[in-house]
Image (cartoon, rainbow, N blue to C red; front, side, top):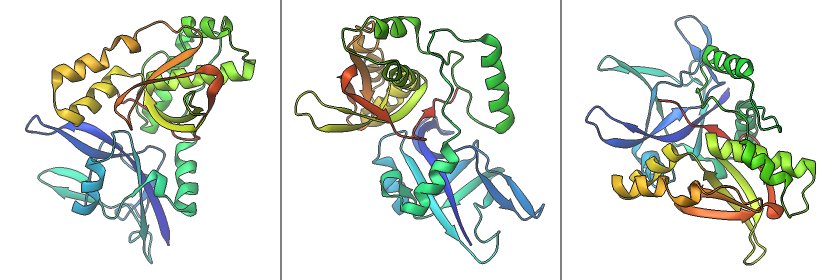
Length: 277
């Protein structure tokens, strides 16, 4: 019996007030519970303890990276993500975690099944329904999914900028760009585009969310003042000009941009919303 479980790296403050990189389980997963002799949801609020070799790789990788683990066994319990208890706290324990880009075919398929339901539906009219947003939040709470920002629609300014763009954009292109802009605003997402400099394809992990940017910068050099400055950089607040989409590149730890006509697409299941405090 083989099971796969998936996580994302985040920065969280420990009991001593220090920021530390941790793994957090993705929602929409189940594991075997021997007490009830059946499947239960994997808890996204529990800390995940990784072996020292895995932890060394995790802390050297940008925040927001996805990780997976393969657990094999002859019984459902043996192949489960087990809960441990110490110092009045429950936690999961994993070994030999694998970074997303190194998933084999079977792990990649399982990963897509887990993450395929996490992308929000984003309307193109620049508006959002309060009732629909509340229903989305209620559903997410019931399923144990992260709660994201109230606004799930691309800003009206961005939509108007696309409509008035000097580039030749189809309705399909505008929809794809609007969805990307929402995902960059709400969390992190992997996407690709063609670079103007050399026409090569850039595969980026990006965000426009200042909280994520600030945490990434704190992890990089531990300077709170610099982290705030980068998170509030003018490039993240300049109105969309209809041509250039600006984002913070988590792999390169800096602000980047691309032109709308060079955009290719997002990667299926790669969107991860920021978790509300």
